[in-house]
Length: 405
Image (cartoon, rainbow, N blue to C red; front, side, top):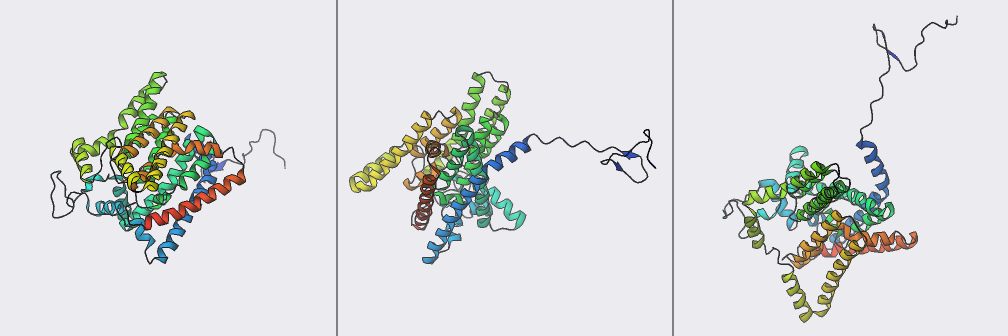
């Protein structure tokens, strides 16, 4: 029998709870404002992330084969050399070694102190060890692996905003295929720092000032080169104030937050002079490039080929920075790149560490990435394949060599 026109009908989406009246369907929950944006970014970046992972896997395979041929352990090379040992020791024992008390109220090994190494990576290593039982060395490798992917996504995000999607994909590839790209897979701080720096730059470009300040503060607990990240936040905030943008109060708060991590660690050490003293014990410091210039001069006099190679390296870095200016990159990105270059070339440090110090300076790769974006795909594929193979081979040779990476 058909129902009359005044007989109530049950909507198909309605729900009747047992023993209760008819319940109307719940309205859909409004989507989180960040989720669609983040999902869309990740979708656009998937090709770049896949290519990045392929380049890094290639590097690890070449290293494993080469190290195996020499009877050495690739795991030990990636997690148990030089700085990696210091980070895992801090993770396991804190900033203390039994038996030696220094004037800086900590324990160290002779003139070399743990205080030269910032705490964020050891904290993460200790957290993973406590939470899931990984060894400190394996925890460092896991942090680096995850951070490298997060860094690659952040590099893509910044590159896309500055130069477009195709250039951003090539930017990630170029960063992965750097000659010392193997560092992105080591238990070092390069990947972690680049991840924080890239996302801080992205937050600055989006005027998310509190996020930018917090990320810069975390970068300040990772490496002293956080000064470049802080500079980017300050320049971005200054531009926002100059233009009288709506979020000026947040810009000021972000600028105030940015140096807190670096200042907190320097204060814990005993102040800036105490930290500089620790660095001087390691033979590090900032002398505006005087020591590096003397080293290049010595090489030119004794080994002209090596000296010319070093001059070409410096010239290439300076050219890349000038190209960034000519590309009219946003002022915060330029400030970040310029300070990274200044800290890397002006540092009084082991010459072999210069490329490592420059690795977080991914904006320097934006001009060649933008140019490659205009080249035919076949030529780009050949070029990037050659670069990836060269990076894998060089990384293995460099890591298997005697000098500290």
